[in-house]
Length: 575
Image (tube, rainbow, N blue to C red; front, side, top):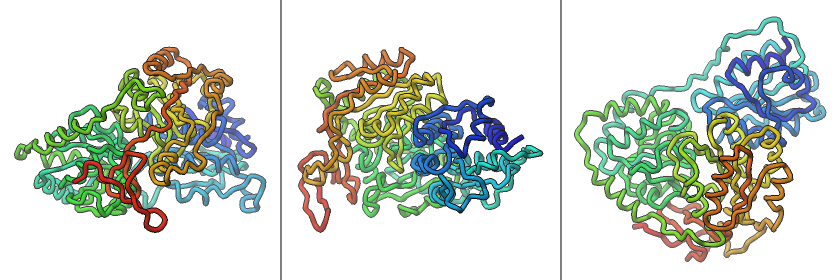
C-alpha cells in the first residue's frame, strides 16, 4: 500500500464518505489513487468553498468534515474556512498537499509553511515524514477534531510521502499525551451551582453552540422547566432550545432581541452553557448582567473566566453536567413562576409590529414567507451580515443542527458552500441557503458545483445591492457617509445562475417568495431566488462598547463625539 492509499483507507475507516477538494501538482499521487476509490469526491470551484462545505457537512451531521487542497495557494485558500471552523468549534480535517520532504524549507515552487500558518487556528497539525505514519495520524486527527471542544486539524502531506510504500497498515490509536478533555463536572461545583439556583429568584439560561455539540438540548429544556427560567441563546446556540417554546427569548447580544437583552440585565442568576461570552453577546462587559451571579458550564477550561468573571465555574461536557445538576434540583420545593410569567408578558409586549405588503420587500416579510414553507427538518444556512441577523431574529428554529451560520469569524461567503456540505451530508433534508448579495458574489462560482453534482438546494439571495451590515453601521455611526458599500447594478443574478444551468427566479412582490420557494423545493433541482429587498431597512442594535440595554434603531441617533468615535445613543426600553 502506498501513502496515498493509506490516506484513503484511513478516511474510510474513520467513517468519512465524502471529501470536498481541488487537485493540484503536489496532490497528483493522492488524486490518482482517488480515481479508483469508493470515497466520494466533490470538486468545488474554489478551495475556500471546500473548507466551508466540509464545515457545513460537519455541523449538519455531527460527523467530521474533510477537505483537500494542493500546496501553496491551494492550501492558503483553505485558511479562511479553517479559521471559521476553529472559531465555531466545528470538527474538520483539512488535508493540504506539500512539496517533497527534501524540498521543504527551500522556498520550492508552491511551498508554504502550512503548519506555521494554521497553528493559531487549529487544534493540532500533523506532517508525516514517512508513509508508515499516515494511518495513526489520520486516526488521531479525527479523534482530536471531534472530541472535547471540536475543531479543525490539518494534515500537511508531502508529495513523496504519498508515493512511498508501507509494509503494514497500523490500526492502533496512537498515544496523545496531555490530551484528555474533561467530560464530567466536579461534583462540588455542580452542588454549589444547584444551591445558587435554589436561592435565586430571577434565573436565566444562556444556551450556546456547545449545547448543540454536546447533544444537551433536552437537558436545557428540562432545566428550564424545572426552575421556571427563560432561555436565551447565542447565535450559534440558535435551535438548541425550541424558539416557539413559551420560555424562549431568542438571541442575546449586539444584534439580539430587546426582550433577551433586558431580561438578562435584570436576572439574578445566569446559567451559561457552552458559550464563550464573546463581545457580540455581552456588549460592554462591565455592564453585562450586573445583578447576576454567573454559573458557566463549558468543556474548554480556557473559556471560563476569559471574558466574564464567573461565580461558579464548571468544566465538563454540557450533557453530563446538566444531567447531574438536574438531579440535584429535582424533588425540591416547587418554584414560583412569577418571574417567568412577567418575562413572558414583557416578551409579548416586545413583539414587532410590521406591515407585510411593502414594496420593495421588507426582509421580515421575506423571512415570514420562507418560514411558512419550511418544516422542522429543513436545514437553513446563512451568510454573514444583515441577512444573517434578520434570519436570527425572525426565523423560528425548533431543532438542533438545522440553523448553520458563521459566528466567531463572521465569514462572508459561508452560507452557500456550507449549504452544499449540509445537503451532501443529509440528502433527504431540504436545504436552503439565505445569502446576502455581497457574500454570495464571493462564492458564486460554485453554482457550477451544485449543477454538475445535481445538489438540489435553494439559494435565497437577499438583494439590496449593498454590503448591508457595513452600510447599516455607516448610516448609524458615520453620519450616513456611504463609503464604498454600494455594489452597483451588476450582476443580474437570474442570468448569472442560468449561465451555470441553475434555474432562477426574481422576487419583487409580497407572496412571491413563498410560492417560488415552495416550487423550488418540490422541483428537486438546484434553484436560485433573487429577492429584491428594501436597501434602507435595518434592525435595532447595540452599538459597540455599550451595554446590552442601550438599543438603537433609527438612522438619526442622538450622540456625542469625543475623540474619534464615542456614542451616547438613546436607550430604548431600559430602566
